Every structure is written in C-alpha cells, then in structure tokens.
Length: 252
Ligand SMILES: C[S@@+](CC[C@H](N)C(=O)[O-])C[C@H]1O[C@@H](n2cnc3c(N)ncnc32)[C@H](O)[C@@H]1O
Image (cartoon, rainbow, N blue to C red; front, side):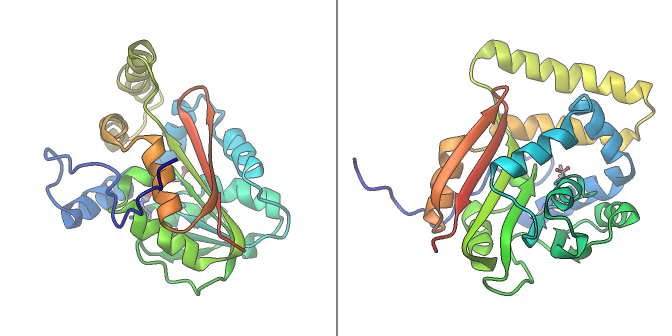
C-alpha cells in the first residue's frame, strides 16, 4: 500500500462567498449566528433529532471509550449537550472543561451545568499539554478554519493513550438519501420551528447548516487529517448513514 502523505493544512470546507470571504469573517459570522441562536438552540436541536440527540450523544461517547472518572475537554461545547451526557458517564462535572468561542452559547450552558467554561477557539486551546483523558467535539467540524491545526491541538492537550471523539453530520451517499435529508432540513425543520416558536435566527442556522453539509470535506479526508496530526487507531462509526463518529488515540 502506498504511504500516506502527511497533510500540513486542511480547511474543512471552502469559504461560502454569500456569508464570508476569509477566516476572520467566517469566525465573526459563525460567532454571531450562535450568539443570536443560543436561546433557541436546544429546542431546535430537539426538533432536528426528534428528541434522540441526547441519548445518541451519550451512546457515541461510550462507544468512543469514555469511562467513569476520566477528565474531559468538550470542544465547541455550545449549550452543553455533549458535556451533559459526558458528565453522566464520568460522574463529576468538575472533571469537564467546556470550550466555546460564543459567549451566548456558553451562557446557556452555565444555566444548567456547573462546569469550567472556557471562552476560546479550538485552534488555540488554553489548556496544558497532556492534561486531559478525553477530547470530545460535537457538530463543529465545519466551523473550524483548519482541521490539522485543531487536531494537533487535541493531540497536544491529551495524555498519552488519551482518546478523541468527533461527532458530525455527513452528507449521505446516494441522491435519494441526500434529497431526503435536504427535504428534512430545509422543509420539515423550518415548519416545526415555526410551530414551536423558535427564534427566527434559528432558521438561518439550519439554512447555513444544510449548505455546510453540502461542501464539507468527505470522511476519508477527516480520518487522513487525524492520522496526519499524529493520532493512531483512527476509526469512523456511522449511524443511519449520516451520523459520523470519528475516534482516535494519542500514541501511548
Ligand atoms: C452546532 S453547535 C454544537 C454544540 C454542541 N457541541 C452540541 O453537540 O450540540 C457548534 C458550536 O461550535 C462552536 N464553534 C464555532 N467555531 C468554533 C471554533 N473555531 N472553535 C470551537 N468552537 C467553535 C459554536 O460557537 C457552537 O457553539
């Protein structure tokens, strides 16, 4: 088998010109989107996942090897949907750090979670080297500027042998499944959102969500990026053809 080329940089998607033209504009756009959508996020997420989102996140963390008493860095913690499930497994909220660049999302998380909340970007994590057992990141891959930069940060903060778990929606294979997902995100969700009085900015969030799913780098590239950043045992588990769980281990 030919040796794999080590990637030095991998943006998760091209810049979407209708929203931003460079990394700085993207950061401002994404932060504004989540700051404004923060108060309606959990309700909108419940609609999107038809109420299964929390259960699914917990199962994914267990599958990735999260166990009682581990220390966790939850990157892109948002309102804390992954963090909440991680705490149920590790058993102590003081063992989890939730990192996110959106003050609005972190404020929502703090309403119900007694965690250390860190206002920061995944590209530059203010956490010591080799200091956590587990890094999780739910549904934020597309918002990053460079996967290699971020995955190297994950590797740096993890203890040797520590594990990473990245959850993401992936474009399904096949035109029929793609049409189904598009109909659901662009047709069903906006109607359900209106019925349940979600904030109008939440609708923009889903519109943007669909567009980023379309252009995001494919799963094999994400796995290649993890290996290039120095991870081993890189795997992808898929549920329903669209929910991807990327897991990997920092060499011991
Ligand atoms: C769709 S939400 C996911 C929240 C939560 N992880 C979940 O599973 O529901 C995406 C989050 O990524 C955050 N985010 C965006 N860009 C980021 C970056 N460069 N580094 C870390 N987090 C980022 C946003 O502020 C937002 O809270």
